[in-house]
Image 1: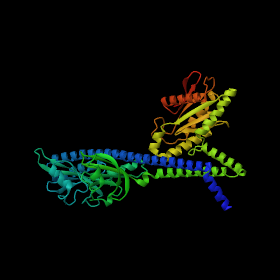
Image 2: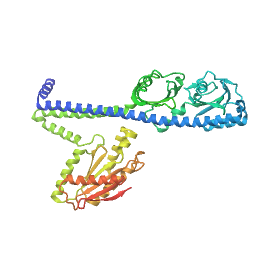
Image 3: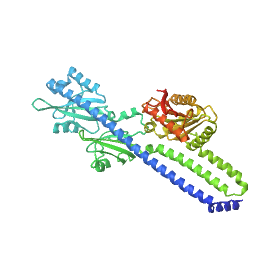
Image 4: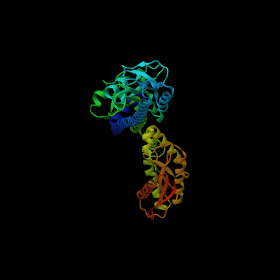
Length: 510
């Protein structure tokens, strides 16, 4: 038996059927590999776009924070000038005003007033604290030397119990230009990085704010281990920033060793650099799942094809088995692998059959063409996995709206679906409206939609009732025209075209 099977296999490989199987396998494998490769590039591109978007959001957060800090420092400077001398800042009334400035500034841990030699004369954590000497700290030295605002890298404050802070300082001058003090605000580093969690990112990006010289101002995650370290020798400073003030690149971090798809943006007026990066396993997780599913489906189909063609080379006694295999393949080829409903091939076959019936007997025939509204925006926002789940749920909802055995719902392509209905114009409108309501009733969230807070669809209806169309293609064109009108009129609605008048009527919807 084993020798017989070996002989059959060798004979099969030398036959036309065997050569056909090899050609099909090569073409399908090549097409699948190309599609997976293109999907990889698209996934990578979208990850870089996401990282770039995050850097823009972080930049806005940084600028807003520094603006509020500047305003508070100006208020502190005014308070110092009005007080007459630094020592009076510690008086209860003045100290309470100083403390209120910190309380109203989100992220503020402490406000300090430093005399010209580096002694902290007042700070909002405690009125009776011993005088601290910060004459060696850059947030004191730089503003005293330059006369300008200075943003320091993250540090551990000398105030007991303080979290990791970055300091923003400004010199305070009297009306004659004499240095009175240096006003400084210690901000918690998480103020610049932790806000991203509010957006519900599933990619858990790393966010960093660096000084222009590579010092670390803030980072999430892992700030605790990076205080006092520099990133000046990383590629972002040695290679990319000298070329352009913003961009994307594949980053291998010198801080934690992880590989990320990253984006950066320089803020030269603040002497800061914003960085965000998505770890490659997270960026490509959905792509890996899609690719595995696709390879599994293709491998299964190829196995079936090989089995069918191998059976074709057997003796005449195996013809019944061959017919059964071919019938099964035909069924698979007529089904959309994502949604499980009919595909475009089955739709074309059904339309030809029903059009012939209409041509012979005059029986009514209607087409409903529909498109999920703003589906690209849905995919971009929620991801391809959520997009696939959305299409499956919409397909099943449409299928449940059919009542006659001969009716068909099929996936026409992408987010488009089509229904072939053995009914008149009014009946088709009722079915289309029922479908529209069922899709909206799924309540699939879609915050990027301009039509509704949930996923919706637009419908175009065309019927042969009182029509002068000569071909099924003309009828499909009328349905497409009606769908175009539904989209143009605001989406999430049903529009119909009567072929006899070539006019569009909006029947239902938003």
